[in-house]
Length: 162
Ligand SMILES: [Zn+2]
Image (cartoon, rainbow, N blue to C red):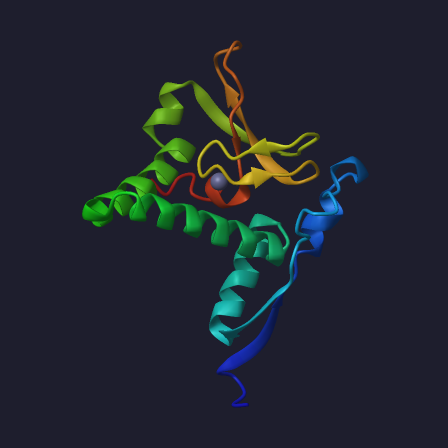
């Protein structure tokens, strides 16, 4: 194998399994988490690892989040084949905006507080499932009666980029 070009990279979903409570263990007939092996360039591995370090989440979590979001994007695009470009733009804008932009500021959100979830939630943006025990960010709002919004680490990293 030509060193430097490719690296055998394991994507392990053990973290996902460990984050579950015993009560949440899958039924006998529910498929268990799988381990996916894939060959990726060393540069991509470096990029993924440094991104995960910045977000302070396990590499496997980051990879899973990105895959889930990508497939959601693909479903959105396929559902509206004639408007692929505008759908992609819309989804990208939605990710930037809801997390960061004018929308959240209009809702009185002045900050995002990192926390460890004590219940299952969904990212208020991309909709990725956030398991109990996962890191997430909760909105802090000027409005005391505002329902909290939760963001996954990937979406909260978009804050300020919009
Ligand atoms: Zn998200």
